[in-house]
Image (cartoon, rainbow over the protein chains, first blue to last red):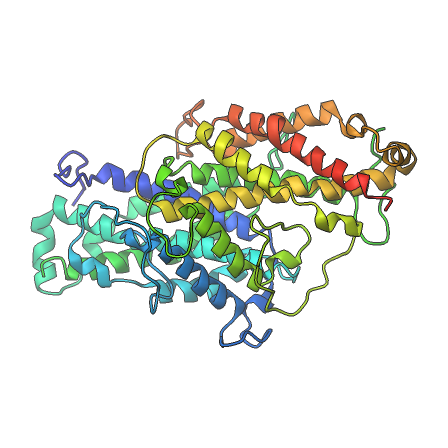
Length: 257
Length: 257
């Protein structure tokens, strides 16, 4: 079941090494984005649909902000890249920029998979209270911008499961076909417990490295980090890894269509 | 001329320590934002006004993106905070959220100071080519989003000069009044060469700490960073510190109005 790094470099350029490198690099982005969100307290009015009175809009400030920012991003072509998934996919404006030919490596079934609703729910209801301080400093717009960065970083990482699944499938096609045809459980085939442990340890180490207060000419404040490393490894263990697997399974169940 | 940390804690809560802590924390944000921009190559079509054909808009994709994103941010109240300065201040829509009472610590003259045109010019024409790889991967929307993060982080840091000047003025009012009245040079009063050297060293150290590849169970790749530490200390020495001083001088020249 081990994935062989040498065997899956196919014509479209997708390699296991590329997928791995991207996942590792995306960890940095996730850690940075959480550290940056933690600069602000909870700022609960940003999440309260009854706060303010936004003409023609019934949701919270964050919903308004994400929806309208995604619309701007759609116009400049963000969602033309199959690695990007909107949180509010309905009624997005079309891209105004010439079509860029992103590499086509995935089965077309990938297009229909978007689990951002689950990511949104976990981020706001479970993750956020674990790593931001209580309080209200009035910076709702900056808070919403930081939330969108976190959401997009997590969404990109979790939906990268499509590429992870594709590369695993190509490498061990014989192992994957029977359970896919039987619509059987794939989760054990997709689980590499030692890799998952290493990922959790590495993101905790990144939380320590990137979240420390860097000072000149003296020891750092060891043990004082901007986001608790335990929260980071928990985020990966409890949500990022399982949700990525959910995306992988969804993708593989349609891989032979 | 040395600033005394104990003497300037006045009724509105502005203290030298707060200003210093914020400047130091903002260094992390600037380093993170440059590292994140460096994930993408230059992507020059994003800056080319002749690329694409955007109905009713004659600028580049980045201009369109920043202008429209700032409009969304204005609606959710970003520019109600006097620490935030838009790059396209003309015709911004009004905030839709209830007024939040941010602390009023600055002289009203502060409102009219916005040097974002200079920051925009330096960022795109001088800084960007120093820290991104050449090339084009088609991710113009993500690139523009990263550019906006860098621009806003730099703008906030440089315009923080208003608060720096206010706290220095309060602390040494007698030293500042004569040159302000004479509209004389203030630059020597505002220059603390040893502090500036320390800032440049610290941001270089942050570039090394935050820009390293963090690995488990082995030595890091020392000397390989996502953004060159020399670029970071140069950014501060050549642009951030001088532009902050420009903001400080502008502010002080109107401090007695």
